[in-house]
Length: 336
Length: 283
Image 1 (tube, each protein chain N blue to C red):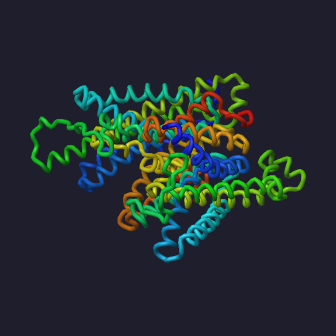
Image 2 (image 1 turned 90 degrees about the vertical axis):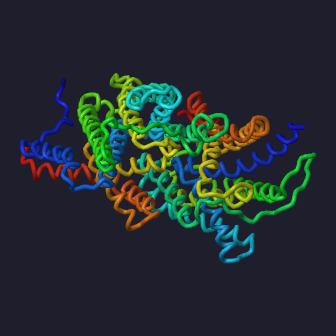
C-alpha cells in the first residue's frame, strides 16, 4: 500500500494517555463520582457520538451531506419495535436484526439517490426522514407504527433475572447501558478511524474534493460512495437500535431532524468535516454542554446550539476540535 | 362534480404556488443556493402578522404589509450575515440555511408555543361555478396575480431585473460586463424574502398556523422548482401549474394525507429520473 499522507503518529506518551482516558471512562461508573443521571447522559453521548462519526465518515469526507441520517436511525428504531412487538423477538436478539434490516433498507432506498450530485443529494436525503415521519403519523400506517405516541417495545433488561434490590438494579441497569454504549462507541470509533485514514478513506475524500477528477483517475465513485454509505449506515443502525432498546417508546423523535440531525451537524462542523477524532471530541464536549445548558437557558438551549452551528459554519467551517487535538497531542505526546 | 372542485382549486392553488415558488426559484437561480430557510420566513411572516394584529392592535392590512416588509429585511440580514460569507463553501450554505430555518422556528416555538393560532382573514363564502370558495381566496388570488405581474415587469422591463437574470445565467460573464453579483444577490434575497413573506401572510390564515408549518410550503416550492428546473423561471411557472393541478387532484380523490406526501414524491422522482427538471440546465 502506498504511503498514505493522512496517516499520523503520536509518541508513546500519547498512546499511554489515550489508554488512560479509555480506562477512566470504563471505570467511571464504579468510582461513585458520577450519579445515575450523568451516567445516562454519558450513555446518550456515546450513542450520539456513534451517530456523529458515522455521519462524518460518509458526509464529512465525500461532502454528500446526508441530511437524512436520522432516517437511518429512525428506521433502525422502528424495525426494533416491529421485531419486538409484532414478531415477539426478545429485545437483545432484535437489536442485531434491526441493525441488519435498517442497513439493507437504507442502502436500497439510497441507491438511486447516490447517483444524484452534491447539493441535490442533500435536499433529497432531507426528504427521507420527512416521508418516514409523515408515514408514521398518517392514517393508513400510523395504526401499525404507533402514530404520535409511538410504539412501546420492551426495554433491554440485562440480568433482570438477577433479583437485585431496586437501587442496585437501577445502578446495574444504568451502568450496563453505559458500558455497552461505551464499548459500541469505542469499537465504532476504532473501525471508522482506521477506515477514514486508510486508502478507502482517502478515496472518499477525493470524491469530496473533486468527484469528476476522481472518476477521471479511474475511481468507481458510485461503488465507493455506496460502500462508504453502507459502513456508515450499518454502524448508525446499530446505534439507533441500541438507543431504541434502552429508551422506549419509539416515537418519531428518533427520526426527526431537529433532535438528531442538528446536534450531529454541530458536532461535525465544530469537530471538523472529515475528522473522526475531531467529531468524536466535539460530540462529547458539545453534548455535555447541551445538557449543562438546561439549567442556564432552559428551552432556549436549542437556539443557542444552532447559533453555535451557524457561527461555526460561517466563520470556521474547518472546525476547531481537530486543531486542538493536534495541539494536545504535541504537548502530551512529544512524538512526531 | 369532483372535476369542478379540482378545476377551481387547481387554478387557485396553482397561482399561489406559482407566486411563492418563484421566490425560491430566484434564490436557486441567482444565488445558486438551496435556500432552506424559505419555509421559516413563511412562518415568521405569519407570526409577525399575528403579533402586529393581536399585540399592537394594528389594522389587519397594515399588519400584513408590515410583516412582509420586516421579513424581507430579515432575509436581507440573513443574506449578509450568513449567505455571503458562506458562498465559498457551498456545503456551508446548505447547513447554515438549514440551521437558520430551525433557529427561526425554535425561537417562534419558544415564544409563542405550539398551539395553533388564528390569523385575520376574510370570512364568508362565495360560490364559483358551483364550488364553495372561501372569500379569502379572492384576496389571495388577486394579490398573487399582482405580485406575479410585478415580478414579470421587474424581470423583463427594468435594468435591475434584467441584471438579475444575467447573474442567474452566469456570475462570471456578468462580472465581465461590470455587474456586481453580490449587489444583485442582496436585492434578490430581499425579493425572495418578500415573496416568502407574502405567501406566508396570505396563505396561512387558511390553515392551522404552527411553528412547524413552514416545511410543507418549502417542500412544495422545492418540488415545483426542481420539477421546473433549477434556475429556469419559465420552468417554475409551468411546473407550478402542473403541480397545482396534480396535487389538487390527489387531494380531492385520495385525501389530504396522500396529497401532503406529494411534493416529496415529486422531488424524489424528478431528481432520480431527470435531475435537471423540465427546463433546467444540464446537471
